[in-house]
Image (cartoon, rainbow, N blue to C red; front, side):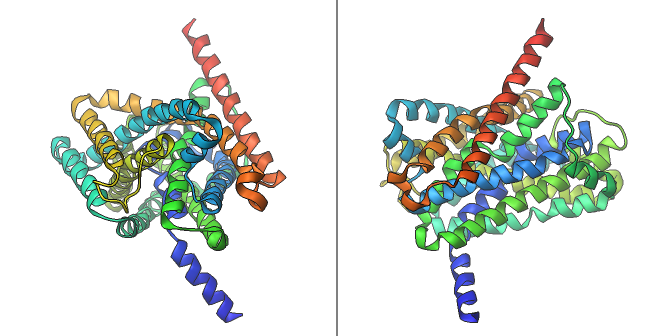
Length: 413
């Protein structure tokens, strides 16, 4: 019994990485801003969404992890093989555009978090971009993964800052289980943004590619599945404390829209220097962390989908398209933050999170079709309950998107 338990723990530690990192890094600068804005404008009301979002996140992440372990291929690779190059190319172009928007949000997060300490963005953004580029280009999968896992630890700063604000825990508990729906464009847009930032399309591509590159197979999949679930729960816990912190610091004082995650950090100052510093440090860590992952995810997805060599275990000469694309995405993301005003950056962040939510159903449809192909996954195909939750997620996201579009057009008349 003890020997079997020790063996399982060792296997779990061996596979620890892809699922945990992918889920946690989902709380990037755009995500932190989305959760902060939700708490600042709507208080504790959006907390109920975290439960269904967590369930949907676990299902989608588990499907990708399972496909990667069983087939040994990335998601975009499977889409190309099963549905053709044309569809894959269109999806890769859309994913590239969305990911660039997300990366701009992350470099804006670097600039705003260090700007709180009077560091110019013309210094912070180029230095972070160079450091991120060197980390992946000069490292290998194992060394890069260790750094990413270490970065995950710093997300505890949001938990501590949320506690220091001393919010209304009773209200937080009530609205965590009480659904609140309003036919309000801003509220529905926020719901789409929350789903889009928590279950972002890029995550599915990165997770499956990382599982393949780490060499996880069906034999280790039970432990890998546990890792995915733990990472998803941690993501939602972090989101909960960000919303609660901003509800207590901003909504309880004066409900309003905020323009950046840095503004949320400043709002925590009256509740103590530590609350402010921890929230700011968390924003910096999340921004740099995600700015490493997003270009990597983009390079993985596009190169797999179009049939080019990819992977951080390969040298620059062995996978030139992969590394040049990785470099180009970093340059565009960092360069945009340097040359556009702060107000435009906020619009890019908001739009990118909503587009994440709009693109997600299409990615999920391909995932569901693939994971139910018995010729690919054999006995590892989806169960009926998994399919039900996945299809409900698709239908709900399409419904929210149509409702949000209708409200916008109605407001323009």
